[in-house]
Image (cartoon, rainbow, N blue to C red; front, side, top):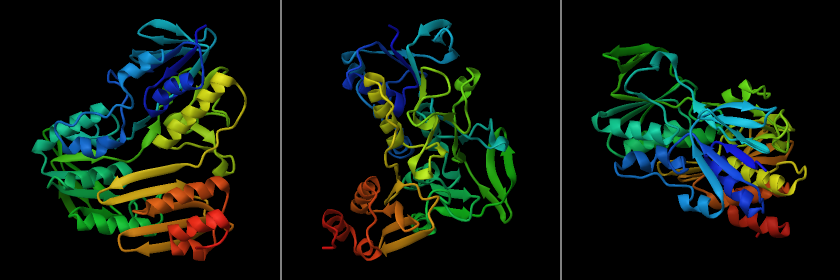
Length: 405
């Protein structure tokens, strides 16, 4: 018996390895990691890790745990999948599998004009974070290109160290693809209050380079000088291995509702997987989040251990710590046709509806509302507007009894 081979040891791959044992899977489990480090949490890399020179990565679980549950950990890059032989090639050697799981994650995008400059960085893994942290002592002026989660988290972390930080965003507002205008507005006000220069609607006119370093961004209204540049303009699924093996891909590796790919005995989970989603009317959807990665891993562990064809279905949720703001999102809001806003000093709740059904909620510094939203979405319940406007206590009472407190 060749067992389960997992390619990729991030949140999805690591979780799957240990969940297989928890679900009673008795066959061999092999976890292949391109990184030498013990699998670690990635969210802190854009925050606490950058601010402290002696900060160590936070491991997902101790290395001894994999040994204790009988998971074989290998390091290196898989170069090939051979579907007919049911093997993967690692370091020139074939490794057989009964089931292969691709958890290869995503790769950061880079602006072509900036590629290769010595002071230009991206931030996704520990190698990126260490390289950027090592460069920070000589960087008083930091330029962040992109007003998404990584860009804003890093901007606030570095501003807290006394650096001059500028964020350039081409869209009219930050987080335009994932958040409501009201959420963007609160975040922008907070960023500026922290001393961060924020330029939305940025129209690039090029860059000024000296001795292999980018020293200024050129815009319609002049130059923005910099010592260090972080490019945070999103990521693309790492599908190269799958495509070479003939696996059907789109924006990610396409799977069915049970996470199977187009090749027998090959599955995909986490950031690389593009899976039919119940909140998108069954359309293939690729989600980049720790929650989605770990939930898919747990679901697939149950399928591989016990069999069956239970579709993957959970309420998606996301979070981002942006300075003093904790942004939490439950559900997918892109198909909403109405939203309801509850705003307080430093706090915000945005409820999204489609055909009068609650489909998503964004909250800032409102953790109770976020947790309730996840429960409501999972149960398919939609409280009346006046209940949601009263806050979490009234919503909780309505969810339990059908009446406000």
